[in-house]
Image 1 (cartoon, helix red, strand yellow):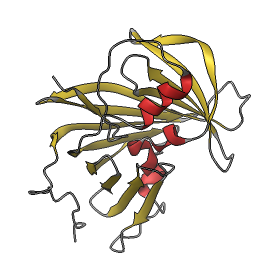
Image 2 (tube, helix red, strand yellow):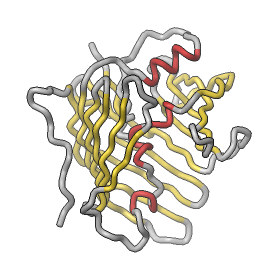
Image 3 (cartoon, helix red, strand yellow):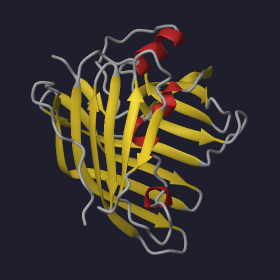
Image 4 (cartoon, helix red, strand yellow):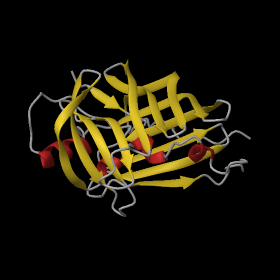
Length: 244
């Protein structure tokens, strides 16, 4: 059976391949280029954000995505008032995500609400897996009994380094530690996949944790999920208007 794992968050989709040790360059090729099938995900839920010295904040969140072998198109809406259109070239490109704020965005006291709660749009698409590889960190580790290879990646503009824990047999990132230098031992922010759910033949991530010194955010998509194969003859409308 075809098994698909998505993260709204790449929402990365992948085929579960047989367990085998492969060279690092081939391993990363499989991580960056999942099984060539077209899929979509429409997820709704809640963001819970807690910052030291402040009360807990909660906001509704929507994430829609169409993932095709050659491109990704998506949208994020938080609090029904702030939206972003996402794009990513997944064939012959560097996989970087373009993020365009919607013209209808309404001003919030803290500026970008998405940034205020510690979320980057690229967290949900896991664009960091396309950063150039620095090295593999040996030995690997296990996260929640899942064996992982650990790969250090460097942002093209050298603004950060990311230590990524990637499931050895499934080629999917389970945890990413963001560092300000390649020699740092303590991340300034961390992304971690908390749990998965199944929809038909497809698996998707329904909870994602993000945290750093003095703050913690949980993205929970258990309210509503529609994850399935994408039919170009009857395409899903994933782009929504903001609430007035």
